[in-house]
Length: 298
Image (cartoon, rainbow, N blue to C red; front, top):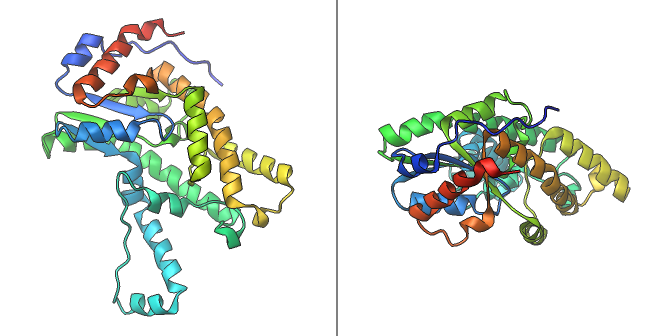
């Protein structure tokens, strides 16, 4: 594993950032820390184009998989099957920036089918589909920056990434192609949570566990450890119990990955710094102030 390289010298000065007539920023970090809130707030100013990676994955790259899964479930019901086969009903995904349930439901949870679980191999197949879709959606960012300006006339651009950005790159490789591309096209900002944020995220996830994408090595290691801990057979695992257990470990797994990305490719800003930010000017200023101290980070 390569050690984190020094901070890049291509970060804008605070004043250059404030005065830039065409700001491009990419927000990354754990889901639930405000990425989508900030991106939506900026979009409402009608000067920022909001590019959601999860939305792009769920519509462009996994849309057919999601709808086919709906149709598969419908075909199990004779009444719906007849309507579907005669083109009497239309089944579609109503995925939005704020409702990613169709995507997360398709990803699913491994374990007991009677409790809504998937076989582990099927689960891995869907995870791989998401990985490929996430990489493709991230690589589309430059094209959407151009579209935002030439087609819609937006001067500014915000990329709202999923929490799994750090899982589809090598954060410690200074030559990682995807991170190089993203940093060349945007100012990458890690919205960094602390222990209190982590506790809140765990509590929120425990109340409403949602499927997530995990890097394969971490996922296999976590699955094996859970089977050893519980003694359950793979097809007897409680799906919600597993993903709750995996999520708490994912927080620790992702933290150093996010940090390595911020050190090499962008900057880190505490989630608390964005509390109360309700307009583009305040958002711009939070980042400008972070740029004032970026070289002083440990």
